[in-house]
Amino acid sequence: MALSSMTGFARRHGASGGYAWSWELKSVNGKGLDVRLRIPPGWDAVEVPVRAKAAGTLSRGNIYANLAVTREGAAPVVRVNEPVLAAVLAAMNSLAGRIDARPPRLDGVLGLRGVIDIVDEEESEESRRAAEAAIVASFEAAVGELNAMRRHEGEALGALLTARLAEIAELSQRAEAVPGRRPEAIKQKLGDQIALLLDQSNRFDPDRLHQEALLLAAKADVREELDRLAAHVAQARKLIADGGAVGRRLDFLAQELNRESNTLCAKSNDVELTNIGLALKTVVEQFREQVQNLE
Image (cartoon, rainbow, N blue to C red):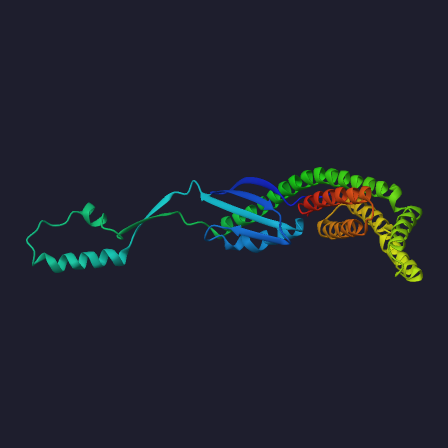
């Protein structure tokens, strides 16, 4: 499976019977899958199947889906509102004997608000259901286009993440080869410091100093951190190669890589190793930022 990002855009148009519609989909980063629909009044029947289609294709991201529907080609129908007309005529007959006025004209009566309603031709149940099914199918096609765009961007992200992992592996190898982290170098440095202390004062217990030196040497060893960095890099490479919705797992590995690089800097007793650790932290942070965009 290929990697997918969580950002994308798609637009889809369609028509069925007298209806025309358009879907507009936008996708941005999110911790989970959150589909936010904007549907015109009267089209609530498409919401449940539309959400099911989105959940069946996408795993993560905030999805904004807007539906616009118009009805075309429907002949207008003129309806006389009989109750309103009856009330108007009754009021006119009641006032006829009390007001000296010309008889009302037909166009004047029909022009009164509420006497005549102009509405669209009534649709059949079959045409309505057909339009709803077509709108859902159109959404499914739009989600497919959105997913294709997310996969295309995911390929680019995969290349960037692979490059960052190569940098992390290269820096780890450089840290491995630093002369200052070798046992002989650590022993020589501690021996020089202890000799300096003994020269300055006779109050130090040589045996106690030897024990403290062993503890310091053990704390300065970054062998475990380098091994864990190599293991995390190997696991991240495998996840990227396998593809799919691996964003959360890669994010966890990014946190672990950051933890090991911090520990390496904290335990470093050599300037070169410290500089490598700082560079490592920078690359790990770049890796983590890119991982945030993955599904």
